[in-house]
Image (cartoon, rainbow, N blue to C red; front, side, top):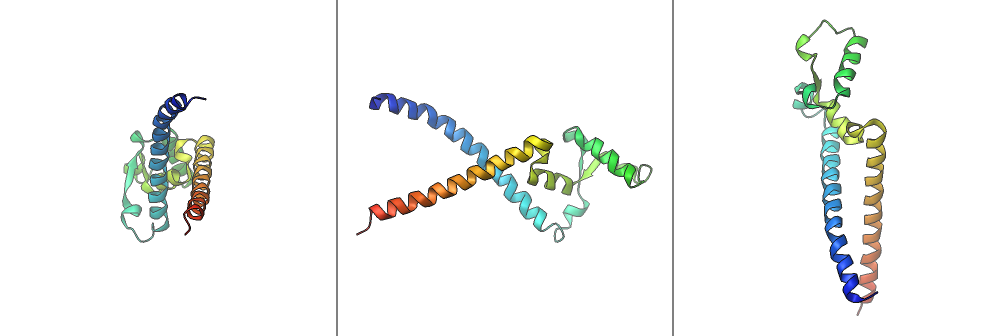
Length: 136
């Protein structure tokens, strides 16, 4: 393959690589931040009191809220909470991937975790390869 052809392929693929890495970075940031919130939910008072309206969430949240309220016998109690979920539901669902779909979200997060492991291992290998080449 000619050098110019390889350069064109590299320039073409690099744009997609940037978009994919940016997308994975945003998702990793979400996973990290929700993990911190999940780990310290007993220390942070706002996580016990804040609620998120189900109107801004995917459809399954209102159904899940209705099932939970019915199972606890709270359908008539606290009517102001009938259309909003605790923020911890959202934190947990964002952290474990259920927010993006029960099966798709979990497998998608598994793929992100595997890609992070591959990137980490390849970084370690490249570090030692470069280090061994530049020894004095």
